Length: 167
Image (tube, rainbow, N blue to C red):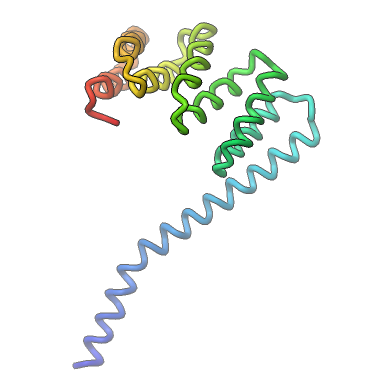
């Protein structure tokens, strides 16, 4: 009987640990992929030191491995090299938003919006950032833009964010 109980205990323990082990394995693979992308992006910048998109890709890769300072520095370099580099502005705004620098993020997102009033991803991020600083009127303007662009699902989500139903 003891042998049987020990066997059940071991099997139960394995089943309890299996999801944790799978999650750890997934996270390790994800981290490995991000580090590989960073090395590839560094190599691309070495091969093309005058390519603003290579710098934007490097900034994104730094962001993906949680090297925020390097991401900001590199994305700013991409923007200096090509002031029309949407990706540089967009990802820099995203990094600022993620670290709670909402006013810096909003300034960049407004610049993107002025250049492309139909960029729905930017409109969504801008609306969220307005909510984060408590500017619900401006966030509501983003909701109206999304409705006008027929993105009803995003508009509904934006309205929920404005009403405090989502964080």
